[in-house]
Amino acid sequence: MTDALAISRSVYGRLVAMAGEPAVAMRAWNGEVWGPSDAPATVVLNHPGALRALLLPFADLTAGEAYIYDDVDIEGSILAAVRFASPLQSMPRRRLGSLGLIRQLRKLPAENRRSTHTRPERRGRLHSKNRDQAAVTAHYDTGNDFFGQFLDPAMVYSSGAFLDPDEPLQTAQRRKLDLICRKLQLRPGQRLLDIGCGWGALAIHAAQHYGVKALGVTLSRPQVDLATAFATDAGVGDRVTFKVLDYRDVQGRFDAIASVGMFEHVGQRQLGRYFARVRDMLEPGGTFLNHGIVIRDRRSRRVRPTFVNTYVFPDGELVTVDEVIGQAEGAGFELRDAESLRTSYALTLRHWVDNLETNRQAALDAADETTYRIWRLYMASSVVGFETATISVYQLLLHTAGRSWTFGRGHLLATDDQ
Image 1: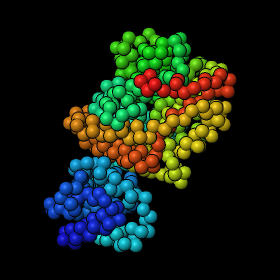
Image 2: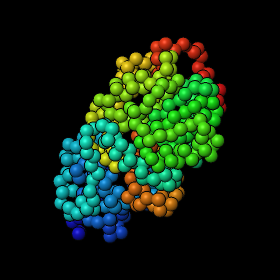
Image 3: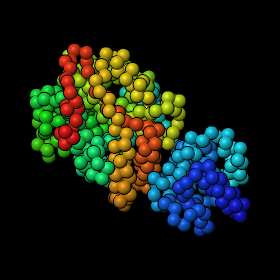
């Protein structure tokens, strides 16, 4: 045990030297604490092999599993802990090895608690309808009650649109919904399709304030049930319909289509088919808004097991924005407008993390400790990703070629941003 303590103490010192400030503190299984007394976060090593479980093999999946299965705990600000670790994730492994870090870690006990858990696996052809159904079910069947612990009252599960970093999340989410409706130039009597409708906030807002008839589709039954109840409560149940349906199976044509936070699940190889299918569902002169997360470094897009695509968004893939635009235009669309909401998504996620931590007990009652830890870590990591521009989120306004041009930019702003 003494050797494990000495090695862990030494490794912590080297991590601090490599990662830089602000340093997090570390508390060993025997109560010994290393690092600044005023550290914003403390990483707790729950057994002598905890650091080995956290860092070997060196990958975000390894580190994430060490946290969610309680080899380590994080007290204080999880954002601070993720920021501290972020430079280490992009550091070449040879640098870690050259400092003797890996060699020392291998001397620690091999105990880790993830070994007693089965890592989620997906079966079937990637992005087939059956596999996509299973992936979405794995994510959203966590339960409406759990998601309700960190989302706004309308249950909007994507980036808000902030004008002021201090304004309430609910205000930013309502503005985002209005922003999408205005960009689509919705008018009374039009038909709107919301692909990946979530809990129905966009379709309901569009029906209430723009007089459209809307169809929302998702692969999650719990979402459809709650979205339908929300529409009834909002008085638009006769104009809004929600269905458990793959977008590839939607019948009919629409004046406008929105896809918000869904296309990340499509897959890089399927993007061309995705945009072609959307184009085919649009009436002549129709308009499409695609809102989704992209990655900036093309080298990072290769599909590999990560914490997020293993435990949060099974089979999710991120591509660069130029790839998205290229695939859309290749399918016959014209890009009319592109807007990044990157900083707004960082702020949105900060609210979600705060809400989840504030409502920890209710979240545990709705799910369990492992699920709570998965979402706490995923959302905190996403905050840092958006803040550092490792990832971004774009709203792309795409028109078919026959649509007339609208001059000026007033219609591209939410009603409270004129």
